[in-house]
Length: 139
Image (tube, rainbow, N blue to C red; front, side, top):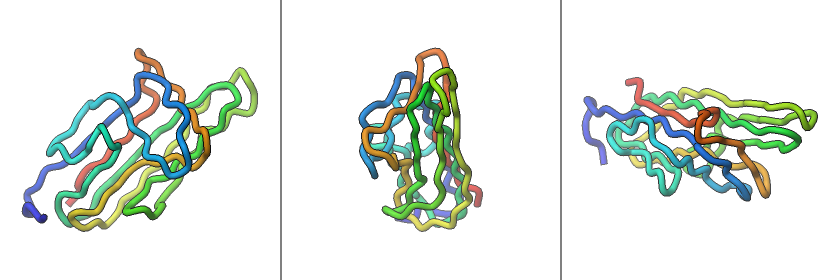
């Protein structure tokens, strides 16, 4: 459904607690919404549904600590676009990784951030916002 060229949509979500046991291809469900203009991001599914045709920008950051490694993909309708990695080399390191993409999308397409590892683990804490996922319509 195309709601017109004047559509406003933007979101930023983040994690306040560790996200554990993520499987390959499983959407990452962040537990807090900072912004969700247009309500096009579903916090329960981890999926953003494109409201109108246009050019969109997306960014994400993931963090882990000690010797866990985590890979994530920005996924559009089941297809990977860009990936990010957080991979500490030793037990005393904290690592953050991410990526950014500008994509041409059609109304109704879905965008999510998904795990690329089995039994994935993302570190997060209530007082720190190192993990986030954002998107918005450019034009």
